[in-house]
Length: 228
Length: 228
Image (cartoon, rainbow over all chains, first blue to last red; front, side, top):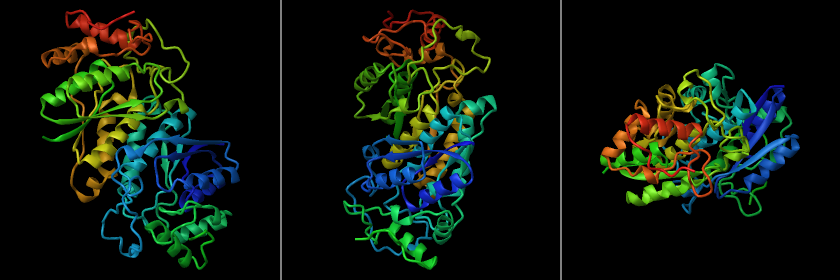
């Protein structure tokens, strides 16, 4: 089995990604970040997903992105509620964007993949139903992959080229849900909300909740997650 | 004054870099990493340099690269001594290479630059007298810069393009020392050694010490740093 590093947040996308990578036959090494996010209950969702899928190797990396601030997810800024996410095609970048977060996450995944000798890094970015984040776009992912192949031992020695795998990037949220259901994902166990209550119940009103709820509606089913 | 983020380890190269960036007129925000390195006394050298140059904004970021291992700098592997560093042009990557370290460091610097609105990131990589590390090569730096400009808010909005500035990349160690001396750098205060004793005295035998000592010899002067 080929080794792969997979970025697992415990949300809908990354849990579907995990099921997909395992179904493809990869030996998955999962990586989750405790980065000062207000929705740290997602760490429990990540642990549940890793346990459910029998992942032997699940690392939780501690980094404190509150050092910089600049995002509603890592500071005292309010998480926007009841925005019209369907109109989010105007290129506006919401305040929930965390500066360079995916670049930081991928860089730790790159380090781990180099030590493991893993040639694949999975990240659940999504360019269709995305929230306007620059680091979810296909051109960003391609540029990251190109950089990664110059950054590491394999890039010098011509071995172990790294692929940044983004199988969800062109799917709608409804298509991601349909894929996950075919693969047996239990979406009741996943957490997407940016601003859950202390028990992990989702707010139902932030961008992440709205995109998720719309995805389930488009897929013709109810979201089994807990809402406040 | 334009804001810049500068990666400061407290070594010869990054301290010269700091003097250079200040001489160029930048308002420098310095960033240092406590990453589990065995030579953590370099943090004191970084603090001394920041204090000496009156840097208001000096962040020490905690990340634990021992999670992955894979390097003599972050594990119990022995730091090689008495190697022939002059012969290090054969493309061999030494065991002191830390997987994806510069990529991780630059990614934190990128996040901070985005929050600050800083358009320049300084890193003291060096491709001539370098130790065979893939993430010190010009083609790597160019690929990183291209990725960075797609990763962030400025890359979407067309504002605040980020430049990865590497003014030392084409200099020999002797030329870096001569530059620093012109700028008033006190090299007694800098620490380059990979394996110093607990007081911070350099071993004189690791690759970093050998490259440094050869640089001072080529510059026609004695290294004022403390050696065991």
